Length: 250
Ligand SMILES: [Ca+2]
Image (cartoon, rainbow, N blue to C red; front, side, top):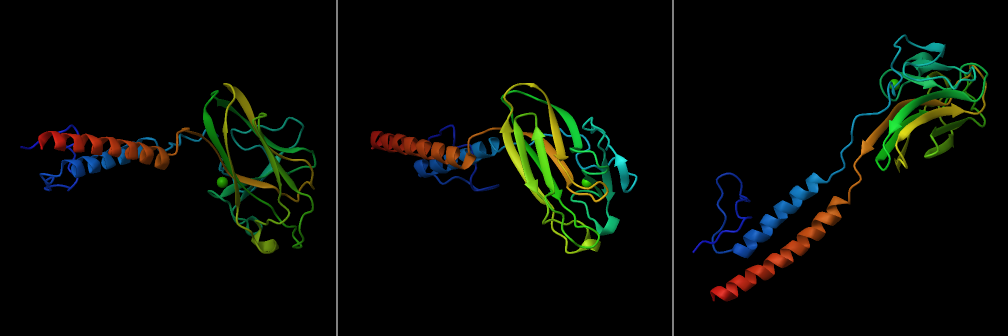
């Protein structure tokens, strides 16, 4: 007699395939495997839309622009400005699109940009951006050129960019580097994302930033661990149930 359980409706053999009769425990175990895989898919982290406006500095799209503030960004309020660099300027190349930002334009420091973002307390986010540096026209390296970044007091960091070069005309270029930080907002509110540099020479450029992203990510247990653990427990339980039913029939 063919017995049915709630899990037997899953057709593991594909279209046209029929579950093998007489192997209920085998069938049920593999049904649980499919259920476990479905569960794993359901808890994969989901990235949401980028919370940063004009994070790729593609606007305004007027080619290389000196002494500007890109759309949706704000000045630091101390008179400093930045440059937008377009692909091809001294052989430069953007990380994303055709433009990136040079955090130094005039000689007012710190020099950089900021943008306000609204975060929800307890929610986990990923901040990521690409950065590079630049050599002088004679091919020599900068000395002590620092990129600083912060998001309120939640995220702070800095890096030296002297070894990097985005200008093909000035010497060997380096790939854009990526910095990524995952954090949980302590409370709901508006936070300022700031990219700045504490010193340098106006007009000589660097550090450079492109492709700024701030995405909400779901904070979930590791699927490969939880689903496999759950599968193991479920399989053990179902095997015991199957054996018990077999003994009762016998
Ligand atoms: Ca860009």
